[in-house]
Amino acid sequence: MAYSTLISVDQLQALRASGQPHTVFDCSFLLTEPQAGEAMYAEAHIPGAVYAHLDKHLSAAKDPVTGKPAPGSNASGGRHPLPTRETFAAWLGSVGFDNTHQAVVYDRQGANYCGRLWWMLKWAGHENVAVLDGGLQAWQAAGGAVESGASPSRSASNYALAPEKTVLVAIDTVASKVGKSAGPGGQTLIDARATPRFRGEVEPLDPVAGHIPGALNRPFNLNIGADGYFRPAAELRAEFDALLAGRDPATVVHHCGSGVSAVPNILAMEIAGLGRTALFAGSWSEWCNDPTRPVALG
Image (cartoon, helix red, strand yellow):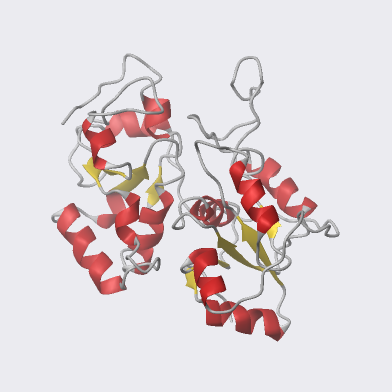
């Protein structure tokens, strides 16, 4: 059995019992405390899970002096620039993940951070990756075992990149289509940040407040119900249809502050049957870094 969007606790339990090759990744993280995720993982995680650190494993390394990635080491801009696909594949191999494995990713933060790894694996050409619906909280609530301590030692493998199964959109492409209608060759930008940030009322992380002109706002946490699970597909479909207001879902390009919290919207649109939509990974943090780029408020 292969999973490519969500996997339930029961399904993960069955997968683990089946002997099918798989790897579970814990992606817990806090933007305000970059080391907190490792501490959470060390305290409790699904047995055998590999820890994936947003800054260390899922972003390009930055020079400690300049704060920027080395030339050629990143595939996007912004506060959390993507590493190259080759660098990412080397990390996957270093933790024993290979092309035969079903990947399961989870966190404790409403799929905010594990979505990044879900998307990156698709970007690496790996279709069989799913988000654990409800995260670690759902696993523990169902009586799932946890263990503590450091990430397990695993024999290295050779992960082979395959054609990308997602679309990564560069900033120049986004900029060239700002103001164009969402017809052929057009784009529909969806910004996943909280509405006060989108409107430019507050900006806790980036040097400029506001949003890309013409963008629509869909805070990523709207996809998760009060119970911590992704909301039903029909509800998600109705809300995205209302947001798009007749625009073609195939024109959608998602973004947020740094390309991380946009992914739950990508996943939600896929769950809703609207297809796999594109990501502008540099997001607002890359856009607003250039003072010549237009900014909208309100």
